[in-house]
Length: 341
Image (cartoon, rainbow, N blue to C red; front, top):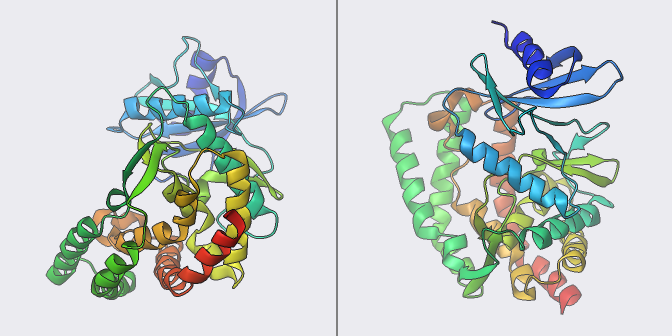
């Protein structure tokens, strides 16, 4: 049966939503998404999960979003089913339903202007709320766990061995192989750079996938944070750096160190509990993490269907951003130090 029709049948039966239309929504990484509209104009975002997906993990992720929302973080409300379920499986299709965020767009075109402050503040509110999560309070972890050069070397070696086998073809694969070779050769310099991190960094429950597609903006304000992952402890500085030093932001203009400073200041005001040492380490953590990552250079092997023109552009931007971050690392750190200390 057509999945649009399946979704249209599930909504009134399981959610008391009677849609006048169901259409395809924004493409998800692993899910198929739909927009359902009722007669009064109210719209719902419906996520359909593919067979074999970890639905237990997805439910935990939805609960994490609910926890953040209960503390005032802008997260769309999840619509529970008639039976109070977060995810319903019917006619062989598993779905979740949440509020649709009207008039919003993703942060994929980068941060600029007032967005720096808005995003920094929103992430600070998020981390302050999640520090109270029942899964456990923030705790110190070795910086080597946050940016693991040894693990990055192993991944890069495996990837280069795959390219050596010649199983992947195409222009992007050829470029990705060259980029992986450059990144592998640079790992000793990356290790030297990361030796400048403090011995310990703060890990806590975080969003888990706070990338620019999962930050929705309405004009210059954050309208919603979406697509949480199941609760896990990770570096708060890593997560903040992932969004405020998105490759497209770093490459958009020369003033990103100043914007970074505005974002971090807003974050600190909203979440004063994170040690200043973590915030000062943010540019180094962001540069080191990207330098040790094989994504999306590994996608020709791991998920060939995901190699779209958009992913190719992102891959090239990410590779260029590593260079841009490392070249201006000391400048960014000095700007932060002047503002925070």
